[in-house]
Length: 213
Length: 269
Image (cartoon, rainbow over all chains, first blue to last red; front, side, top):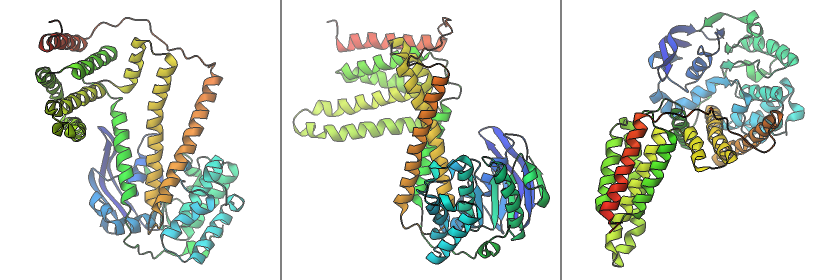
């Protein structure tokens, strides 16, 4: 469970999150809305333990997330496996030399047996229609293909909570239809979804809560 | 949509003890560079003209290099410390640390001169190094890099060179931001034991190379679309700016130091 209690965050003297109090239950689908610069991405970064509340507390499954807590390597690795982050720009997320390697990076790190890694990679490639691109370098892909690779690279880690920053960006009409189908399936599998988007339609059918910033 | 069976169950993952200091350290370094670049865009402490500041710095460095007595160096140190006293504590610490580190390196390099009977310079050269670095740091902290490159026009540096310098600064910021994001993504997905840390980091470096190549090509094409044919003209508003009080004080300081140099070094005698 995620509990944000009176969370405040500012960049220099510019307040971004102001006294935010929210609770997100496991399995919920949460929509983050608000105009550009309202703090959607900042909130996602905070939920992923990349930045920390300057006032108030962020509690994740009973543990208060602080700088000191995230310095505990064992906890921080466990935490980052539990919560996956899809970046707005896929270029910010892809760093391996091939799509297949990109997808295998997480499961290999988690120490899964090689047959499990292969199964996860193959399943994810098929699910996201990337099989033909498996040996291509991520930088040589189109925007939509990169986005799908980024989603697949998180899928293979199987996080329990998915945080997504404008997941629809770079996707074409087919990609959007696929995403509208994919998100309910994730929710049906018991995953928690926290989606920041300007196109609420992609998550509208399954939404449990809306946080307007 | 039917998800694979492994997606539908909850992961029971227990990470090992592998550490990833290399990512954290690289990230910290990058973030500090980016912070320095962002601070460059804030309002400057004193409204000092970039051209006079650049000229003052160059002349002062020349005087420091040419002087042969400690008296002039003490006078310069006094002036620089007065200017530094107006800086916030953290900036002051960074500046002094850089200057002292540079003079320590210089001291190590010139130490053999002590044993070869040229002891006087063993003290003089590290002092000169310290003052030169302080001078440059003062310039860097009080005039934005963008204004500095623009001030190069005073020295009739071709506009294309100034444009290249400006673009370089902009790309340091853009690529720095991108590599910070890539390293953060790497950190987020480094959830276990990474047997080949160098490969992951070289992947980030490779991606940055690709991005910089793409960015430069995009920029060139965008410039061509806007009529660039190889010659770059800088837009000048054509207004003559009045000398600000801070610039006046700076030029007065420069003249005083030139006078001091002439008197203390006995240039005219």
